[in-house]
Image 1 (cartoon, rainbow, N blue to C red):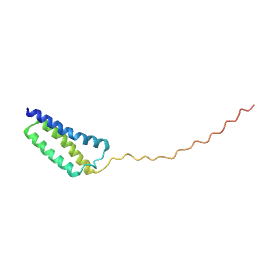
Image 2 (image 1 turned 60 degrees about the vertical axis):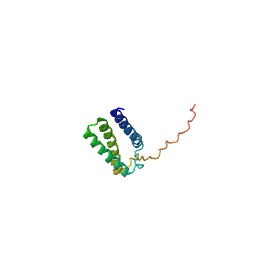
Image 3 (image 1 turned 120 degrees about the vertical axis):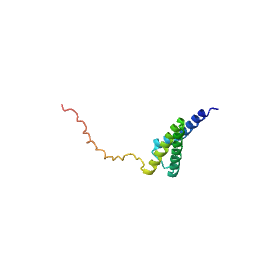
Image 4 (image 1 turned 90 degrees about the vertical axis):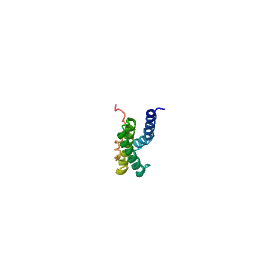
Length: 109
């Protein structure tokens, strides 16, 4: 089997494995289900893989490790900032009641 083909498949699977987490984070803006240690270890490990991929000039790994390192590093920063995004608070004013309508008087003759 061709090693380059296996590299591309493996790289694609690695990126695909981060997509559900990325989608959930973008949709909910809630990173509480990820531990900081998990995010940190992934970011550090993948950045080391990225560095090695650059050394051996393996394009598929450079792209894959670059994308996944950026995701995990961004998630780590998101966790460190620990600023949950909240919807703006809206203060509602009490409704102003319209004046009561006067019954129509019959036309005068």
